[in-house]
Structure formats: C-alpha cells, structure tokens
Image (cartoon, rainbow, N blue to C red; front, side):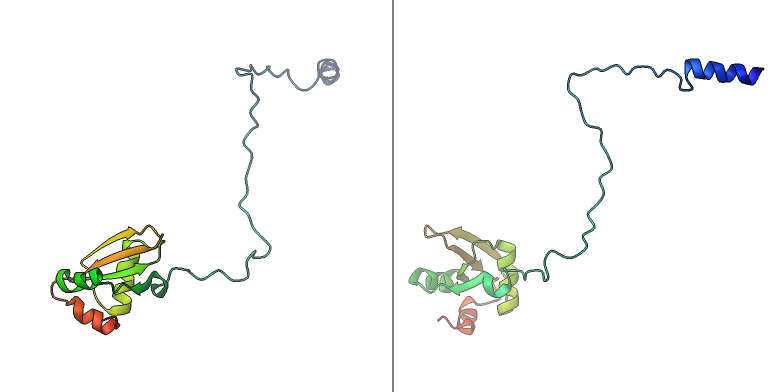
Length: 139
C-alpha cells in the first residue's frame, strides 16, 4: 500500500530532510546574542538614598575679606568667596541667589595652589556689593 511504502521510505531515509551545512566565513566563534532581561531585584540594596552633598549652604564656604578682596568689593562691585571645589559657576550663581537674594552678573573662578576654589561674583550695576557685604556681615 501507499501508506506502508511511505513509512518504509521514512524509516530508511529519515523524516528530517538533510539540512544544508552552514558555510563558516570566519575562524573566530562568536556567541549568539541571547535575550537579556532587565534586573528585577527582590529588595532594595540601599534602605535610604543619600542626600545630595552639594546644597546651597555647602557650596559657599566663606567670604574672603582680605585687603584685595575688599578692594574688589569697593571698586569692581564684586564679592569674593571660597567655594566647594566640586561646585561650578551655575551652582555658585544659584547659591548666591538663594542665600543672599542677589543676582550675579558674572562669575569667575580659580583654584588656588592650596586646592581651594575661589569665586569672584560680579554683581549687576543696580546692586551695591558693599550693601550685600554688610548684610552678610564680613565688613
């Protein structure tokens, strides 16, 4: 019968047809890319996240009241502060705005040889740096 002949043929030849051999083009074996699932931790590794270390109070460390700094206050309408080394000009500008309610026109920074960052905070013409320095209390 036809069914018996098909079964005989399948037993002799095999039900799987011969698969063509894949030609290798490189000597190096590359692992196939498999599914990478996102992590789903069962519990938090930290109980509480750390607070930001650079807040407005830690950015501005202290005003500098040397003779040259006071000359800058009087002549150039500029306040001079020692600031955190990690703070950038935007941080300093925001801290001055929040703590002393003064906008800064321009900020220049430098890192002194002893490793402390110094900021020259230029105030706009309508704000007097002497008044702000008196309000802060270092004159």
